[in-house]
Image (tube, rainbow, N blue to C red; front, top):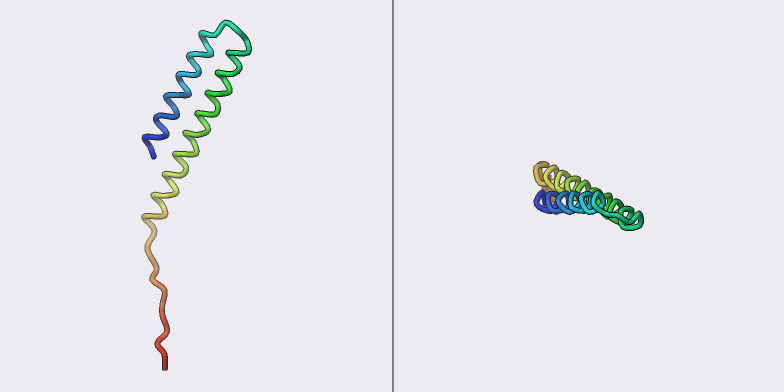
Amino acid sequence: MSGDAEFFRKQANLERANAASATLDNVRDRCDRAASSWEAMAVRAERTQTMRQEREAAPRIMPVVAAAS
């Protein structure tokens, strides 16, 4: 998943560069919105990866099965 976050951040940077070079306001705004969306996806991917790692590192508790009398 960290690869996903890296990809999303690269896309956000690309859109920021596109916004910086845009001459039309609507194109610049669109690129800024796209950069924000890519950045949000990167944050979510990192959060998901962290939660997955925490879940996998947590000790497994086996259910206790009562013996039939």
